[in-house]
Amino acid sequence: MRRSHDRRSLKTALPWVCAWSVANHLVLGQQATDVQSNEITAIPKLLKMLELNGAIVTIDAMGCQREIARQIVNGGGDYVLAVKENQPKLHAAIVEHFAKLQETDFADCDARCLTTQDKAHGRQERRSYRVVPLPESMGQFSKDWKQLTSLGQAINVTQREGRETTEERYYILSLKPRVKRFAAAVRGHWGIENRLHWVLDMTFREDESRIRMDHGPENFATLRRAAVGLIQRDKSKGSIKRKRKRAAWNNQALLNIIQQAT
Image 1 (cartoon, rainbow, N blue to C red):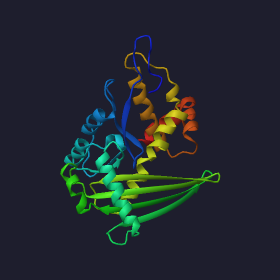
Image 2: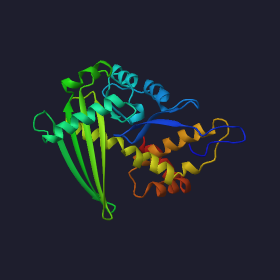
Image 3: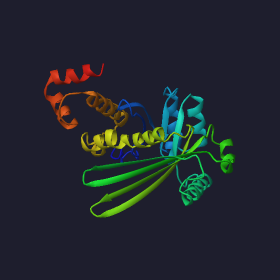
Image 4: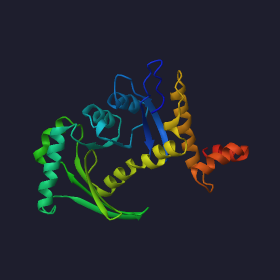
């Protein structure tokens, strides 16, 4: 919450972690982060609030921690965790393994591959997904990462205004190597940027809010996320901005939005 700080009282901006339901476009839970800590300590607290049985939990590289993976599996869920240099040995081993597989064009392994192409908003994107079983050469990592079953690679090539950019990301999975499921989890993970973060920043102007006294930042953050969930479940015509304005001006429109949620 960028502007919830208060220099006069030496209060820092409120860090906030949310659990987002891809299927329902709803915030399922949220947890404030301790001022002296970071997301790593908030994520386990947030996971305790959730029913994980049968769920697939995706987290950025910050949450790629052994204890978090164990907590998800113990709760009956599965994980798809992004891996970066904050796990240097694991990341290096995954990168090396996929590099060797690419040399033979994945001919000598049980790799599952999927490529999709999208064109919108003046850009063209080609996404390539590959998922492979955990190789024997990386068996030592299965001791630290509970139920580690598969490794994933996602390559995103974007062409826009004559320029091409490429981004590679790597993942560990407790799921069997099924590429469509892996691709859906990766794509769904980034849905929170468009469905929640962008809406909060651009429509609700959350980053500009100077609410900062007492529990005000937490309370209004909760109300905004609840409002986003209500509006996105509304089936009437119009953008989120228009629906919000319509609900403010017309009590019947407001009642309709609330009733549709039930």
